[in-house]
Length: 443
Image 1 (spheres, rainbow, N blue to C red):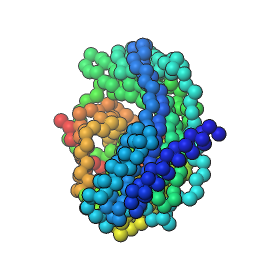
Image 2 (cartoon, rainbow, N blue to C red):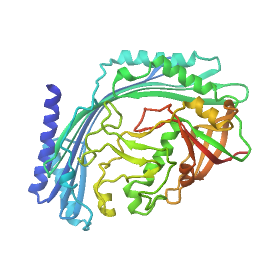
Image 3 (cartoon, helix red, strand yellow):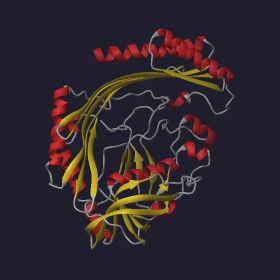
Image 4 (spheres, rainbow, N blue to C red):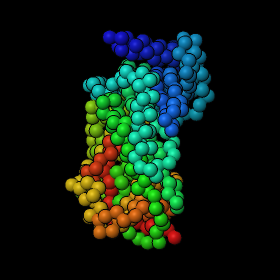
């Protein structure tokens, strides 16, 4: 009951922003408000390093005078501040240039169904308990192997928040959500070199988190296996992006079909709708309604209803990723993606990572990528990488100080297989991805 009372209080504040802007002459108004609370504890070398309590709040309002837009924000929720924020947005709008594509979303597209998506799972975590968990996590990592000789620490995070969104079309909704995580990063050394790696677990429900000891052990295992890393000679070879890296590769695809990049003509997938961009076995879809999903939402950042829909089916691009503004610029309709995608799922294949290694036979397994070498306009892709060299389906030795390169159009079309080792720790869920061939630059 208390939960509903707090959300109703914040809804009243948002409605007052909308009403005040209309009173000041705005023809359209959109207002949002958020409050976040949390605890973050980190331990290093068996000692508490930081204890942080978070309490953040903020509001934003956008107003339209015809097709002139003004926006303002504040972290002060007092009535005086609310009034000043609205006044500032209205002043900006009056002086702004007209933009024929600006305005509130299409009223027909506003969300009107709000099932419980199981997004809020409070963790009654006391500071002492959080310290114990962080220390146990790091102890497990440091005790895993004698070559683990230093640590960047282990961290326990627990956050809860409320989001409320309203506009002058009559939309006014709010919800609570939570997010908890455990992470650990350690260093290992031998006579030749030093390596570091990490592992983490994240979930809305604390019961879905990996055991802290397991997180520490996984971080240590990943660190130790990198010892003895060497470079490769320059070559062309098959490449597997591990599941953690595959989501970034798919993220580049989503950026290329994002409305903002499309209307600016800064995408290598311009005019690619209804064309083959992936192999015919590839299926990528969005499911905003997964209970407890990190990307689950009944509506997007504008209040437009989210949709369970195909992005790529049989390798063919079915839809772009559009907000109301980018949709209008392209002469299309919003896809409910203001603020991004919601639980993007790459349909898994039949093999786990070991199965993909056997299928690849000889090639490179990439487990870490560095740098931002992705050109969205041309699709050229070049990034620093490390991982493992594979022969006869088995890992032979760790690899570092190499660069992998290609063009994303070719990379996507030459996907050979997608693993079922799906990484569910983010908004994009993908297994490992096997690419037929890429350029690898080394010594």
